[in-house]
Image (cartoon, rainbow, N blue to C red; front, side, top):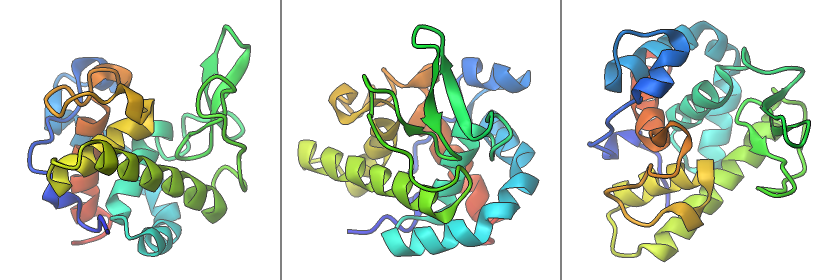
Length: 196
């Protein structure tokens, strides 16, 4: 099982207005996702080689890894010493690194591996993504490969227990658009970062 081509997903709706408003964009949907990916492009180039190597290792389209980096940390620009997603209730950060590995003891409970911008971090986070794709494949064996991939992307954000149907795959994700936005960004990066 490999997910080496993000273009198998044909129905990505892109960013919600809530997500697009982070960049004060006058649009939403795929144009907003593409603009946010473009905003992060120069910073993303720093990680291109590592992303390609990890993508090849895990049989995941590198454009998808880049898109998650863009969505989660804006290619590192949104992080504070590698940390993100401040939780005022816990007075602690929930996420670590470019792909924001969930370290919350009530959430993902992961122990960060490597520096926030290291290949080791990308390997850990991509392994978590692959794990969730597998969980969605097992849970929804009748879904197409494209649907399972999109469901796995949503589960990376909020867990497979919150994915109940394909029609509402992003119902519980951040901004209610996580997989739709990430896929749209990935499809843009496939062309503009990886030249495919």
